[in-house]
Image 1 (cartoon, rainbow, N blue to C red):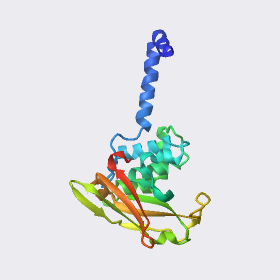
Image 2: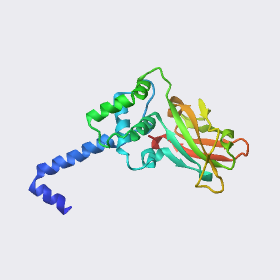
Image 3: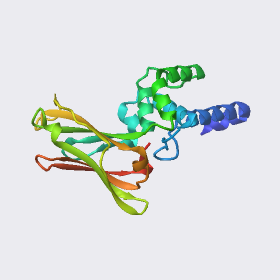
Image 4: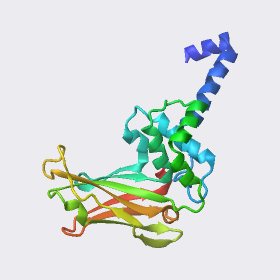
Length: 226
């Protein structure tokens, strides 16, 4: 505090410039204030830039830091990553190798690297999806094939059950070194239409083994997602 007051007395213009620079930096890398960023139909360039900047700002801080509230933990060691269209692009930026504080030239490079993804987001005719990617542990190399996923929740005043538009189940599990009781690990992914997820408020993503009946539920609120 004394340092700030001292700098203000000695050179108020310098302090103002430093504070302004800090505010600008925060605006560049902070996630959007609006939860579950609307990325359907033709996505504006502003939202695309925000996703890229956000992803780059998290480089070096770990993938869990990038996902933030889009990372959920459940029973039996299961965990869920929710990849909204915003987070899908942010994750691409995170793994791109571009600097955390991009210049305009860096952003132009990003546009080239993610040309296909950006074209898809900007196309009003494409159907955008939210990907629910869940890691599961079991005791059989092919246990992941019997898991199904769906969503139950409330949106716009009525109860809703959503089935995935597409499911990708890992056929052969990987050996896990972290869970001795369940030595196999799979990552299954379930894709839901963005417009259907966007209509929900509070809901649960449910994953269930049709063979054993084992079920894991992840409570989700769209106001917490990016």
